[in-house]
Amino acid sequence: MTSNKAYKVLVSGGGTGGHIFPALSIANALKRRNPNIEILFVGAENRMEMERVPAAGYEIVGLPVCGFDRKRLWRNVKVLFKLWKSMRIARKVLRDFQPDIAVGVGGYASGPMLKEVQKKGIPTLLQEQNSYAGVTNKLLAKNAGAICVAYEGMERFFPAEKIVLTGNPVRANILNCELTREQAKEQLGFDPSRKLVLVVGGSLGARTINDSVAASLDEILATDAQVMWQTGKIYAEECAEKAQGKKGVIATAFISDMNVAYRAADLVVSRAGAGTISELQLLGMPVVLVPSPNVAEDHQRKNAQALVDKDAAVMILDAECKAKLASTVNELLADDARRETLSQNIIKMALKEADEKIVDKIYELLNK
Image 1 (cartoon, helix red, strand yellow):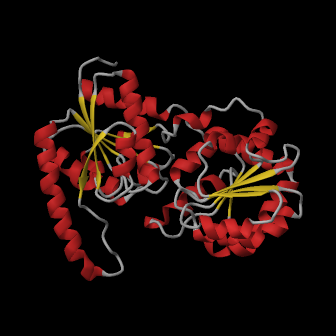
Image 2 (cartoon, helix red, strand yellow):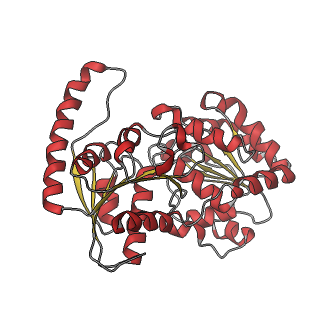
Image 3 (cartoon, rainbow, N blue to C red):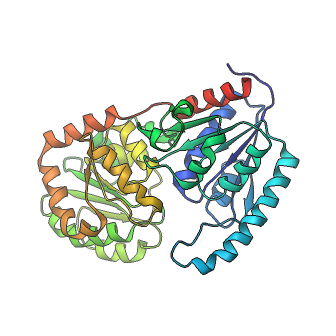
């Protein structure tokens, strides 16, 4: 049930695109359903949400919170001070905004903010993107009204009666491409008759993937394949140099038309972030996943393993990427039937309209 009442919704979390894109998708779905709704974001100071959220037309408050340093414990004195300061700001936000409900999408900032919300008895909904739950969401789960997840088997982390399997919200335009694969290749400047490998390392890029692609380019190109290489802005210059003069390679810091790039690709090589995996599932893309080892609880490897277990993706561990990337890619490019199997199995895991299902749950909690 939806009402046109001007509810106030607090959305908290961030730190990476994997937290911000779902948060914005949920906010947009709320606005589509009820334009009167008032939404305030709470994020972490100096993180990407402080740019992305205002660019999407929403107000955001930044908390000075940061993550615990697990290796250098003496640095956590500063962390604790920032946490105390964040709790004070969170209390002020609550007094000023007076939300009817709060949505936590994981990441540092949702911890102090949702803790304060729960103390006041205001309903909270958590959204967990990964197959291995984040620390913040695990701590908040006991007092949450509902926990929206993208993977089965999350009872390991959360109370079973609170779990709702919704999937992860994805960027709206990803699914909107009317082109054929050949037309998409042509639009991106590739030969429509040759196979295309799309490499995505995330907005900042991935050092291992970029080094491995650079080392594998000649071997992949020798099969008459082409490569669209999204390098990330940090590595853009050095990767462009390595691609220079090689026919059939386009190296670019950022791909603005991801929907066209996905449509053009015969095979994808990617990190195993939850948001990217959700996009690949909805599009049924055959993929080689190279999980980042530099994430909390090694959750990317667990995300990838959940797909490998269903024969829905191929995984190469980060440490083995340089040695195995070319042979793995070339084997898959040569085997149309294997790519088709991966494609059919990954699309079976797709959960559609996650943002709408999450909004349904928000209204259910509000109407209680």
